[in-house]
Length: 404
Image (cartoon, rainbow, N blue to C red; front, top):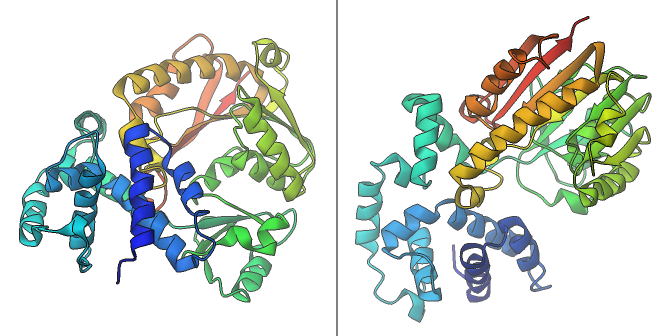
């Protein structure tokens, strides 16, 4: 591979914003990709993937390059040289790469790779919490899996098309996909492609959604005609899946504390042809109380550490703080206590997170069931999905039923 100056400059500019100004990687990359209209898909792919790689391996590359934060541009070029050397890419004779110690880079990589937190490029506290909660052996496998690049998975919108039809239409556009066992609505791309530019996407035939994330809506056992509440709907990936599982019949009440996210859901629902969704912003406890004892099904896709989706959001490794995890656990329990009251007798509730930590998952369910609010609930089943076993994002989901 030959390195092109303008593409490498884009990566360095992006890393400056992400590392030094705390900007979100996905937003920065979106901006970078609009930088030069002459770039082809390969150029854009290089910028996006290289930036994500450097974010993912920030700690390891910085240790090898012997640089410390905040990184100036020279530091970032040194880290870039580490990335290129480890990838086996020949460095051009640009001034930024003068005197790069190629053999030393490889030697330091071998030496640092003996220490998990450096090898997997994570903060000390994250390594500690993972080891404590999952045990050494499982955590080693899990964090290695969470450092791999995520596949692109589509969820077929069955309100508008079928999996087989969509697969054929994408094949005609040179986008090859495959089915995934145990994931009825999923299509996995064989190679990365810009699926958002297709007419199929614009016509609402699919959404991009991780395979394990697709299991959450299915876990809720919805039927057409039910009243379903999605309590932390966000921009509505799972809400839209619920709408298709319910064949647009019945009522879905999508709730969130962020109105702008629900606006995005409204836009997506229109494209998807999902018209049984009603949005409600949670500005006080009033909208919650109005629904006490009224829902057949309640989904709590709870806010969490997001440790199960590090493959998609590698910058979360550097943004997350241990205090946040302590705080979010309180929020999770509070949400369970309050929102579970919407479930009517005989109704069901799913508590789900995209975390792999038992303290955010099964322990929260256990605490809830032992509390006054959870006394009339029963755990029917739960699912712990680890990345190293499934090959997809880390998730947890528990199905509870309210008894008389």
